[in-house]
Image (tube, rainbow, N blue to C red):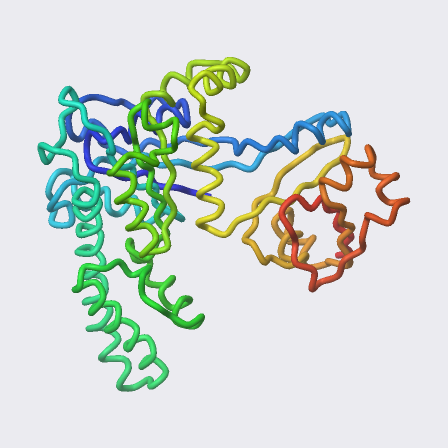
Length: 364
């Protein structure tokens, strides 16, 4: 999973990126301190892996990972080359989803590019730049498809979709808000539009507003209302607190969060929200040599999940031996779970669930 972090300059984006990834991206109180995108790889926390490691005395534990890309602060006119413009828009095309960091705190000591804090205006500023960039792509594609559609009637559906997208973008709405059938969704993916990517809003609040998850922060309320309309996700974070957390070990982090009256770190919230946004789950494999989490789309059938490990597993799939994590841990070991009828043999139509522990049988 690859997430691109965007936001206006000075909203706390690079500070948050540094804290989540310990990547050491430059962070300063002036625009465009991020020139090239910084990349950080983060292990997805999963308490189940630690328990399975103990149960199997595993030699190795491999977590699922997320790749974060910190993209430079965009400004009004970016799509026309303002600031550092189109170069950064191209970086966004490479990600699976966008984490849009939005400033939701007042502080006269931190410069705002538009002089005052207004989350909806800030979101619209970036959205419009993404929309303008997409409109150029749509216009070029319409011109090309109009010519070829005369000779190939099958392209008429694509042309109809392109025209619908153009109308939507011209009204100031992102491509992801268009109602589409499954065929149109597949066509939309091929266009690789910036505004078709799922968005997760990171509401960057003060330490005081973190305790109640931004419930009493008017800026956060505005973002949550917007997110409902466009089926996006929102999580509340304090970049300043995350920066402090990044300097602590795991035990110290837990104590610090407890003192703050907060149950989850920003990274935990971000991962939970991004998995939900992208419709992802994790299944597990476990043994003496390795305990591992594998990330797959929700609804994946057993052969597809097997293919995540190796293409041969999918090609030669025979059966999946499945036990749920909860059932395995309740009985203390695999053999006891099996004796109690909790290990199942599943075929090609089985839809893998989050927390399934699977042993694949295959023959190539």
